[in-house]
Image (cartoon, rainbow, N blue to C red; front, side):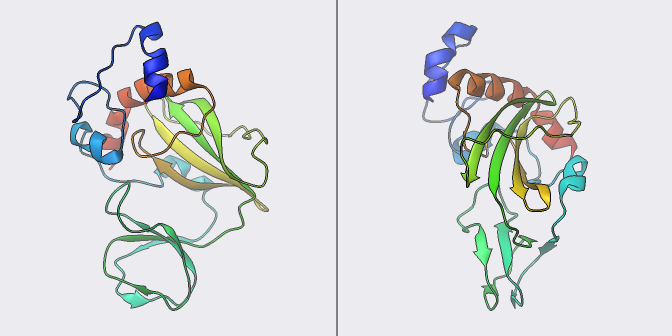
Length: 198
């Protein structure tokens, strides 16, 4: 919110602080705050155009069994849910539901790439060994109407796609406030991509 207060006016943008998001305006806030005005779409952590950057084993399941391997588990019922996304180990009783399971990998560093109009607006280091290491350039041609955040990790085997988010479903790790304003403004214009790519 600080980024909006500091830079919206200079960019000719107006803002309001409200209890509920206003349709026709770009909401800035929690996923719960933004969802009522976001177009209906399916949660999609791995868009098809990025799957060539996914080298680890990933599967979906409805659960209801005891895990025989260690898996990183995400709830597919929403961008953010009460279920804790983390590594669950052998013997964990995975309840029934809609789950995304991915094999754990060794991550050296992880970055978030903020995309709007198919271009990287900025990046932010997310976690790892060297927070000062610049995010590597990605050899990816994003769709021109794509806007969102894409997480990649440096691994011993190269760069690996971790997950993708709609622009209202992720945190900000960039350094410049004005980049956040640009990204939110233009990425929200790209929300139709999420609707068309169910």
